[in-house]
Length: 93
Image (cartoon, rainbow, N blue to C red; front, side, top):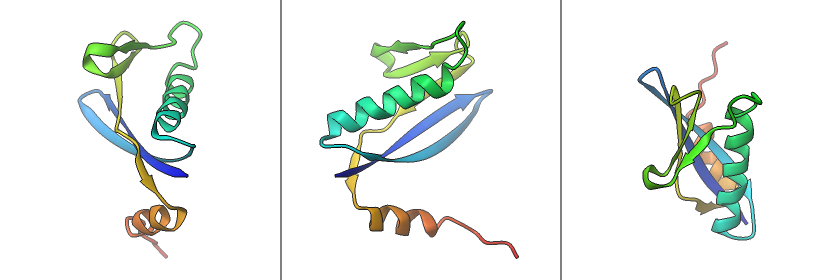
């Protein structure tokens, strides 16, 4: 099965959404995989592995300078995922 998960990064008062396609057997597994990806991506520096703040349901990196939240996984298909995201792509020739 495939799930779409959106990670929202808030840094310097700007929010950026990144969409991920996750191959997993369940929504819980998809969430775990996306969480591991976020922790690895944003916490690459040995000095800042990030901190998950459970009551706010987000990760904090670099002493709160970067906040990352994650949407609930939505089951999808490869075809639907790429159709949805190709519509948002603009080709400049």
